[in-house]
Amino acid sequence: MFTMYINMEYVYIGWYPLWIGERGTFMATARSRSHKHFQLDSMKIKRAQKALRAKTETETIERALDLAIAEHESNRLALEATERFVKSGIDIKDVYGRLGG
Image (cartoon, rainbow, N blue to C red; front, side, top):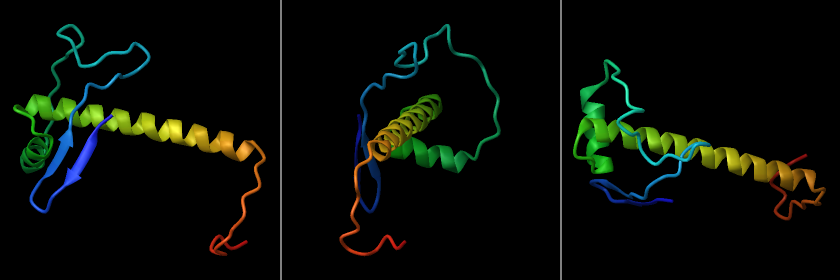
């Protein structure tokens, strides 16, 4: 879980360890790390580093990847819950008349 507060000048994201994947890892260990070489926009990295309050560029990339993975997992779970809800046969009424159809 994480919380986000948006201010006009910066974004603060409260950081909590994420339980990721089937193997349940928190962060990359020395054994699971590999050297990769990418050509990335340095200004984008600096902006992300400030937004994520990361100390290093590596930490910035790791946090951004963790957020992307967590967002994907959250979307997957929401989709599964929506599908179960729709398949349950519940009758949904359009009380505001905005769904059309």
